Picture 1 (cartoon, one colour):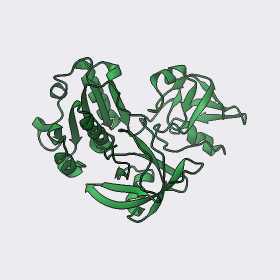
Picture 2 (cartoon, helix red, strand yellow):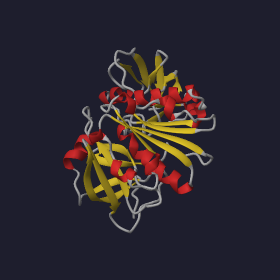
Picture 3 (spheres, one colour):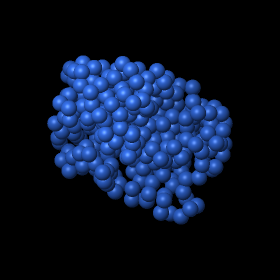
Length: 322
């Protein structure tokens, strides 16, 4: 397997399967060689969807098997081109470009009791974690929340897995008794219980607040979002692109990255959702309103870098090294 200077390499779509409503599963195999680079539970890879369009998708299979990377992609109603292109164009036998695995959502080494919570397509990294926890013999429960049985991915696989009895399925259309109940999910939680949750931002906020209320320490709660929150009607502010000397007004309905591009600058972008860290830019002066999920809390407190695809300004002006 030859990795290019971009950090990407060719891979073969070995199979494509519809596993739930609006969800396709791509099994990606090496274009050359027998195995990919090893990955850890919770990792994701870049997928080059088209010219200049890159998206990140979590690896869902057992980390013990690096013969393939298995990606589940949900077709989003408000797709910006990524999921729609994959659903419409990617097929078995295609050669695509992907990146090496990266992990911003890693299992801690000292976990002894774990609660996994997935909202919809958030099951993808969570399933990989379940395989790893089961292999290590760690006590865990797995809560999968979905709008309906037709939209719940990987159910058959989980049911037949060694951890099938750990599954708690919660469906929005199956009546109040089956819906996710934090009091039940975290009833036996202690301050040392670890919680891993992935899904839409509002869902994660709900689960995180409930876990803390039930006694789980904040530092033991780990989250991964699909992207930055989208907020409309915000205050406008000024960005100074220090290298070019351009002074730009960032409107309430535009990101910093979009504003720079409209001014003829070419910022480095990838996910455009605050997940990957590609667009992190050095802040020379000004206060940042961080919206990304890539940087740690300490990095955000330092205010030294900003994810220009999603974050904004708390101050009237930001001066950026771009």
